Image: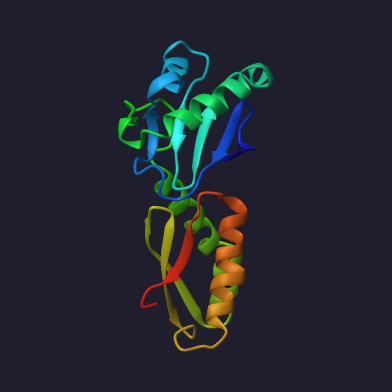
Amino acid sequence: MHPEPGELPGQIRWIIPPGVLDIRGPVRAPRELGRMQNDGTIGEIIVGPRSVLITADSSAWRRIGPAVRTALTDALRTPGDWLPSAKVPGARASSDGAIADIARDVIRTQVGDYVRSHGGRIELIDVSDGVVTVDLGGACRGCRAAHDTLRSGFEGELRRRCRDVVGVRARGD
């Protein structure tokens, strides 16, 4: 487990192995991490397929970081004790929903433009547990370069924009 900066000030994304937590979205954590959440030491906690995003006051992280790491490590030992939180204003509905939004944007812009310029089509089918499924059609169907476009173009850009992506697959793979 290691920390990375989040997308907003005061956010730290703790990278965890896939499959550790089955729950997604805003949560109430167990044990000491939950107590820290309840007393306001930390704020929102959002679980993704491979990460736990924790928000706190930006100036507090230097002081609370080691205690949060210890509490998170302890809380991950009881994955069944994590509970969905009541809808938190401004929170993402789920990591899969956020990944889907980013995937649609990638399809709508540079990668989609490239695919369409060659007579192809790429369509988002589903996002489940961080795995993005797309359908490749038009000139992409049967094209030997479609795999490279999917991996280097679409998946590369998606992973660049979102750390929670577990994988990308084409329907029928």
